Image (cartoon, rainbow, N blue to C red; front, side, top):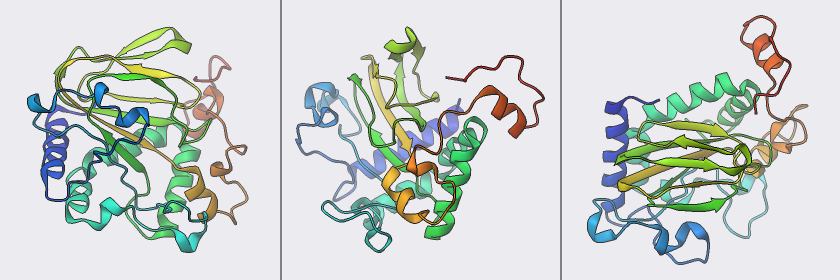
Length: 249
């Protein structure tokens, strides 16, 4: 969980970024479910204009080959409002990074290698969305086996996330963070009263694959790394032997 003060600060930072001139948030109709206006709250009842944004310091322009020399910040980070959003939400982003270091250390360590390679503060692709309901879907940008982190902020209650494969429904209220393989597990969010900001953090495979192409073990090649097992995590964090030899997923 992220505390209420940090949660409110992220929500307010999102609000400032969304209403800034040349807003960082996408209002286009692309045919993608993320841009389906019917899934968003009524704009007249929102303090944040409904929409979504891709925020990354490592981004390949459409049509460009995935090579180091083509890597650059996404267009959002070429605007003052985008830079301000990163600066104002860095504490929450740090908490997400700390969670990943515990849940999947090898992915976290590979992530740090990418940061060192880019000489930048972060390369996690953050995808803020402002929705009232999310249809069941899989997230295909972060790879089949790597974890996504969904972080919730806003002014609402009774939020729920459902993962049919697990036959489970989870509390999805402000301050909640959920980590799971978003491509393997179809998932969807319920409608709720109020405004919701979801920041989906994941590692874009083609960014790491090109930047770490000389590394012997590169999780961005995906075949090199799957979900962490209980045994692996116990040894990595010096927890002693795992009582059960099962995968955490």
